Structures are given as C-alpha cells and as structure tokens.
Length: 210
Image 1 (cartoon, rainbow, N blue to C red):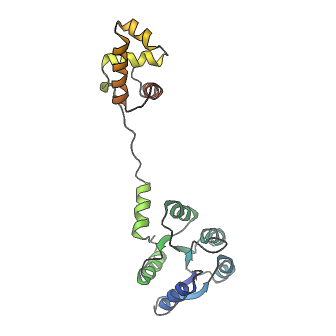
Image 2 (image 1 turned 60 degrees about the vertical axis):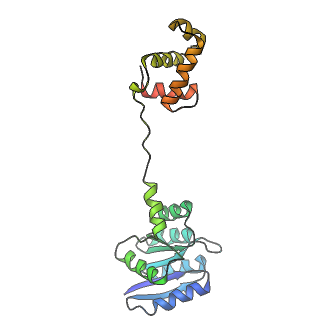
Image 3 (image 1 turned 90 degrees about the vertical axis):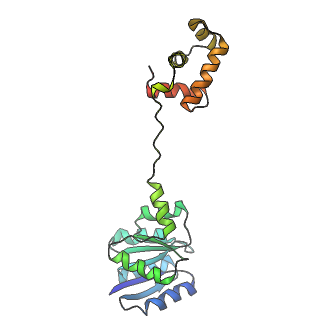
C-alpha cells in the first residue's frame, strides 16, 4: 500500500484527486492540506511514501515546504503538481529535490500512474517538462576556427592587428593600400564569424593562428 498526502489549495482539485485515490486499491490518501503551512506539520507526523505537492500555494511555496520536509525525511518522495511549466520553476523544483513533475492539465489516471512510478524508483514528468530537461543537457559546441580558414595574408594582417598596429602602418609594411587592408579585415571578420577588431584579435589569441 502506497501512502499519499495531497497539498493543493483549490478545493475542487484537491477533493477530486482524493476521491479518485479512494477508488484505487494500492494507494491510500492519508490526508489532504490546503496550504504548505498546514502540510508541514502533518506530513512530518504522518510521513507518507509520496506527497502530491502544488507549487503555487498562497504563502509558503510548495518548493519551500518540500525543502523543509526533505531536510528531516529525505526518503519522502515529492511529485510536484502545478500549472507552471517554465524553465525557471521546473529547474528550481528539480534542484530542490523533487522526484517528479507533473502538470495540472494531465488527466487524473496519469497522476495516479506517476505516484506509482515515483514509489517504484522512477522520475515521472509531463512530456513538455521532460523535453525541457533533455534540452538543458544539449550544450552547443563552440565553433572551432582552423588556421586554414584564413589566407596567409589575412593571418599576417590579423597578427599585426593583435600587436596594435594601425591600418596605415600595416599597409606600409606589407606594401599594399589601406583599402586592401580593410578588404582583408572584412574577410577576416566574415571567416572568423566576428563583428569587430576586438573580437577578431580575441579569437586570434585564443586559437593561436601564429
């Protein structure tokens, strides 16, 4: 038998879920609470297997309540139950120790399944939440600019720019016009995918084009 507490401030939602749980043989709803303040003492006393916890409660948030309870009984599982599917709320809850995250728009049978999954060691999440979590691990690899992307003349000009040389001095040393220097610099910006001289020099120093 899986013991459950429900923390939800909207009576219609709270009562509806409780009534559905009463019809399920393997789930026992010990008590329901309308606020985090009321839930705090009750959950610590009853120590259920899992808590269906609303995040957006009137005063103390569901996340704060969960943190206080897990500090004493980390084994109690929490299924966050909320309308919030923003990245900020999702990751705030997961970092605080939530074991699952389900949206209020999900049908009650799915909520019941999620409660079972948590107690079986799973981490149930609404599909949109799971996608957000997966995307958070997709780190874009920085673009590596190989030396071959620049011609010898472009690399030479960039090297001189990195030493603080003005266009006129670079043109004089290379025996080309200032206009030609500017044309080469424009191509350097394009190849290195930068917008100005500072960014180009930084890439030169980082990548080592010398």
